[in-house]
Image (cartoon, rainbow over all chains, first blue to last red):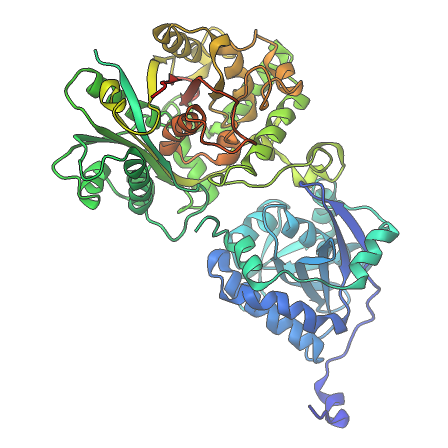
Length: 229
Length: 396
């Protein structure tokens, strides 16, 4: 598609400088090691292939969350969102989950979504924690505004941390924002934020070599769990 | 009293079954058991249906009446049996007595529950309604909370450790991966849930000292059996499984009223009655399905039934004595821990799994070689209403 760079200069939002998220790895309950690393903008088309099958899964609001993630990543890919980022989890090279968000300004972070593509291993919890770690420890922000769009998200974020209620509207347009402050984050960190750095070279090489994707049916099976029928 | 045998057994995969209603699940499991029994067009005389939460979770009552119509079993007698998480075994007991007495010849027993229709905390609250309505429930007690306190006491008194609980959890989740009917089909890794510092997230404390993987999941599911007099069963093609013994006992409603809260008297009594009726000793049992809603219960029940002395059950689990090929294989189905715990279905599912063991129908990875006898424990409340069955293979 032709792009008019003169007009793009007007349409593209400003970007705050964003230090990179240093990759880490987490040992999961099944013993597999999940590498959590920052996605590059160039990774987006490939990531969207994994998000696409989730658009058609009603269970646990996967359809809503996936549709929004799809749009958010596409907007980031095509320079239509300010200071956005995406972190992804990979096991044996396969994409198992993604989280994304952005900087509203230098002090305030805006959490977007958490999408676990493999379930039952607390992948969403680990990835959400990595997202908060990025905002607090690498972007050095004062607070992150968060909403949940599924009961699972509400339980994992609002209750487990626990987050602070506010009356601040969230840009996703749903309920009012909940807030993660630095105090809440560092208090919750010992029980919710884990991971080791540096990532062993062989693990990192495997993650970087290729972002692998399970096929559509496997993804639906993992998420919707329609086993045996 | 006539000898009673199981001639049909069926189950549907446990898990989260959003697409099915409670009635559909009950019907699927029933049809599987009826088909397995090979009775052809012959109907059953009565249906005993186990369910704990239909009234609360589905806003549905008189479930047995609905099922007989759904299955075109009219005019069979139909009763719904509610006895908390021991409803399944209670329904079997009622069917057993009806056939043994000579009043009915062929009885369908089916248990089912649809718990994933509500959020996890509402399901936990629903289960907590079995606690004492004045002395426990108003103060916020839950079954995991009760199990946590029980575990702490059991650890202090009988030397159970987290390593022992972990051994149960690893074994049962591993067996779940081999059982196509299991809710949880994921093997756990010791490093990921115990040794690694990352385990603090993977396996968080749920009710201290119990962690996430010490608890059974909240499940949907159903299981069914068909029973008839042994003499009639012998004329059918599959090896009948004799209900050689059963026992049931109760205990105080609240744990604090017991002289020793770690002493599960009702488990001891129920298993003793069942074994005596079957003229067997604990050491005669080939395989057992115990009610491991929490890992501590598998250990405690293995001691109270008499498989191990008090204080030895945890060590036995850690030493592999309860695995396939061990001294007494326990919960080769994955137990409640991995097969799942749809409360009304559990007592029936335990019996179904033992029937498959005694017919030698399971794959080698789960089958106890030449299994001849099996024992179940279905644990209601927090051990205040317990049923046990002893089943025996009968050569055709």
